[in-house]
Amino acid sequence: MKNYQNFRLLFVAILGIVLLFSSTHQVLAQNKKNKIRINAEFINVLNKEQFLNIKASARINKKTVEVSDAELAIFQVLNDQETVIGKTVTSADGTVKFNIKNFESLQADSSGVYNLLVSFSGNEVYKKASRKISFKNAKIKANLITRDSINYIIAKLIDTKTDSSVADAPLTVQVQRLFKPLIIGEDFYTTDENGAIEVAVEDGIPGIDGNLILEVVFIESDDYGTVKQTINAPIGKVIVSESTFNQRTMWSPRGKTPIFLLFLTFSFIIVVWGIFVYLIRNLFKILKS
Image 1 (cartoon, one colour):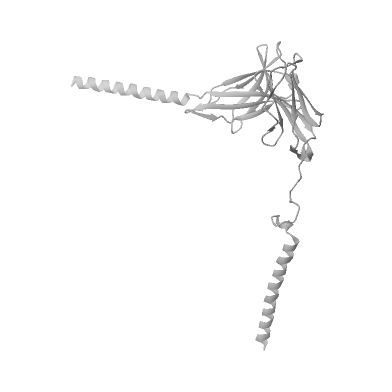
Image 2 (image 1 turned 45 degrees about the horizontal axis):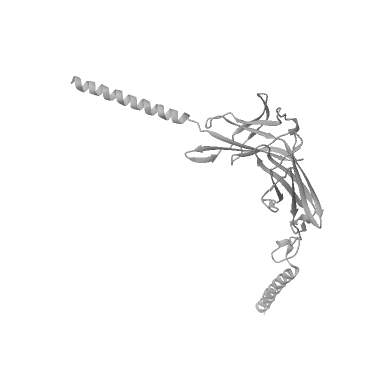
């Protein structure tokens, strides 16, 4: 009997330990937060805007998911001090475009490098995280010239801090389009020792009123981010509008129905109603007689 009681007490103790371990594991699992990953790229559209393209994602159940509604703070880091320059929130696809207002007011360190920090303070689902972005300032000088009836883009990449040319840098020349730019020539052209490239622009590229918006782009550089310069060039092929929106065609809306079709339709209606009136009139004559 005594052995039975000892066995019963041992069984109850083991069961209690198992239940305690299980509940503790569930609490820890519920309190476990996912790690968020922040990617950011600096883009400098010269004479227009400077901004960060930011994306937040996380690895959950072995799948990469976008993190929406993540509140982010952007800091400038200078001499180990952080100064807030703005805040933003990611969209449904985990991305956000953060425009840097008053870019000229940002300060670079002694080596001409700008340091920004994108910070996420964390919430009930994700741990806090941050991403540091470092870049130098650069500019692209671009001109359109015509030589021997051929149009050329001449572009030069310059480091703003040192006012020196950047050699061996890949520059892409393209035509701005609504969805995807049209690349001119090769995928990229490498700058020479003077930081310059010269690219011929082929004839016959269509543009509204014959105007093209040419872009010279230094894409995703580790040192400078993405730098873009645009040029308005009246060298394109004039697009002839073939729209029939204001014309009376068979496929036009009701208000633009062709005249002959209206005439034909109303003629049939008049003829049909005329027959009805004639038959009804004769019917009344027969009834009166």
